[in-house]
Length: 380
Ligand SMILES: *Cc1c(COP(=O)(O)O)cnc(C)c1O
Image (cartoon, rainbow, N blue to C red; front, side):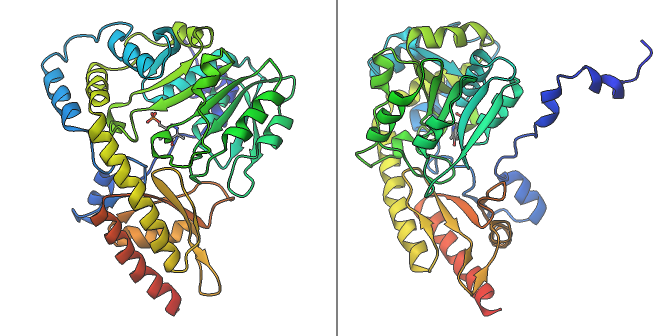
C-alpha cells in the first residue's frame, strides 16, 4: 500500500463532496460552556417543551437493565399499534432511527444516480442531503407566499424524477398545503414518482383544510407519509420515527434498513408514549394555545410573523427603517440574553429566525429578552 490516506479522496463517490454536514440548533451544553451561565433556554430545534410523558420516562428507566439485549426484531408491538391507530396493516409501517432515517431510506431506494427528486425551498434541509447522498439530483422549487407551490412543483417533475418531497406543515415557515391542493397535485403527477409527505408536525395542525394523506395510502397510491415521535411525543433525543405507505411502497425500505435500527429504549419509550394519549394531547393543546399567543405578542411588537400550524413560528428580524438586522445578528443578540433561537441557512430567509414555542415561562422570557434587544437596536 503505497498511497497515503489523503489520496483516498479519489476513491470517494464524487457526490459525497457536494454534501455539508447537517448543523442543528445550538445545544444547551455548548451554550452553557461558552457563556459560563446555566440559565439558557433552547427554542431552536422544535423539541417538545414539556419533555417525555411520565410513562415514557418509566419505560426508559425499566429498559436500562436490559440494555445488553437487542430489541425484538421487526418491532411487532410498535408497528401493530401504529398500524391500528392509522387503520393500516403492520406491513404498511416502517420504523426509523428518527424519521430522518426513513427519508434517507426512501431516497436510497427510489433514486438511481442522476435521477431527480423535486422539493420546495426553503424547506427541511435533510431532503436535499439525502438525495445527493444517494447520487440523485435535487430539483428545487421556491415557496410562494411562504407555502409550497404545488402547481410549480408538478411542472418541475420531468421523466427523470422519481421522488417528490412535500413538507406539511413546512419547516421553517410553519405553513400548510390544503386537501384540495394536494388532491389536485396528485392528479397531475405522472405514474413514475413516489410522493413523500413529511408530516413531522401534524399533531399541532388546527386548520381543518389539512389533508388526510393516509387516505391516499389506504387507496394504494405511491405515497409515503413520514411522521415522528420527536416532536409532539417528546422523544427527539431517542431518535424514533416512522413511515406509512402501501405495503409495496414500504417493503423495499424494510429490506434495506439496518437490523435493530431503532434502539431498545427508543422502542420501549415509543410504545409507552403512544399509550399516554391524554398527556400528549394536553401538551399539544398548550403548545397550540401558546403558539397563537406568541404570534400575537410578536406582531404587537411590530414584527412580521408567518402564521404557523406547527410548534414554531418564523419571525422577520429585519423590520422597517429602524431595524434591518439579519437573522444571524438577532440570534446572536438573543444568545447573549440566554435564549437560543434558530437563524435560517441560505440567502432566501437570511432576515428571518425560527423560534420554537416553549412553556409559558420560556415564552415570557423570550419576549422580555426580545424587548431589550429591540430597544437597543431601535435606539441606534
Ligand atoms: C424535526 C423534523 C423531522 C423529525 O426528524 P427526526 O429524525 O424524527 O427527529 C422530520 N421532518 C421535519 C420537517 C422536521 O422538522
